[in-house]
Length: 386
Image (cartoon, rainbow, N blue to C red; front, top):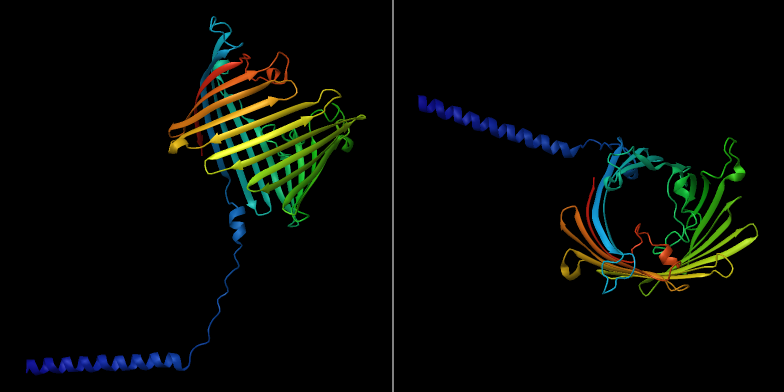
């Protein structure tokens, strides 16, 4: 009896399973015989651009830089019979900390600022001074097409590299308050600037719109050539107009700037032309500059720079620069190398030589405090960004 009872229970279980399977199959068939209408879910539109131009929190960044080294050389050209005559050596150590913040609470608004402080114990600065403001400006997009930048910021017009500040007629923008409005969709870009800085307004009087410096620049690409025409005017400074041209020919960047200055009936012209060519590990740059600042005092300068990266697949870079004044025969030649033996650490060795007669251009422009003509410099730098 127990065996028969067990078989009956097993048969009943099998029948139940088969019945449930049949009902499940019927239910599955019913799902397709009269399907329920599809429901379209509404997916909110995503502004992918705003994800990159909007931040819920302020982004901070900065850098630490420490440079130390020594320079030794001669304030006159060394003589074999008197190698110690005019010999002088100095040491230096400077450290700089830079902090920046970037706030983007809305795609149409941005606040950016940079502060820095430096310490120079060799020259008597033994404690960190207060942070100095380098940049502080806001960016605002008006009506979707006009981009406004307002505050303390730099503006670069002109294309010089070796003689960078010579044709950049807006090089002083960072020393004052600048309001710039840019329209990138007009031509290939149009920008207008209003600049106010110390010296434009009389002390103790209200600022007048007549004393503001006004500037306007337009960019246009024609037949593969980039053209820029700009000008600035301030009642006491006069007019400065610049025409810049840039074009690539056979892989070589060709560039030129022409600047006209006119004030109080006087007028003079400045011009700069240059080229740049880059290979995988080699960069070559040349530049020529002319100015006729005063009658009979025209000046011609030329420069050439070459750099080699990772020489023979090593972490060593080589470079050389030659600047020469065709007007008076003076010049400077600098050769050097940089090597990164450890993380964040760079070693630099440079040999600068200044030549020319007393009172000539590069003799007067020698930025060595000891006015050495031939020297060798050894530097050690730690640079970290975060």
